[in-house]
Image (tube, rainbow, N blue to C red):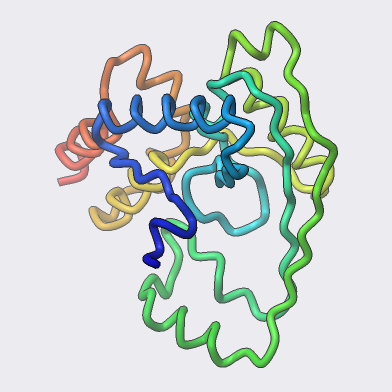
Length: 194
């Protein structure tokens, strides 16, 4: 039995709109099929430093189905929460440091099932933001408007020795207004940073 048979992952190509649409349809299909195992989704779409909850991706909430938020609390040396702009960025070093720890305690807390109201069912981003707010309150940490895309822009800005503030904006708002992807925004930054 191979891994894809056991855990049935849904693979997404973040830069391919068809792939994103496939994933959203697959999530909806699995959410509606009661014979299908539950789907686990990490809605930030990346790893963070556990100091704030980043903007949740709307895909996990697009089906309008109830979700069960789960919060994770780690204890020990923090070598496992790699983030953008962090040093060291070498995954091998971080893996080695993580493996050097004799014990990493992880506490999983299942929050009550969140049933979206009619407004949230029609607006996946509203649904995602409300669940994020609930989880942040439970973890006693703030929320951040940053996204994975902001992190990508930050990494490229730092490589061009630009001020990190160039990545500090609401990506979804700017992307919608400018019709630009994060890669196109990075190219613009690179032009001004050179």
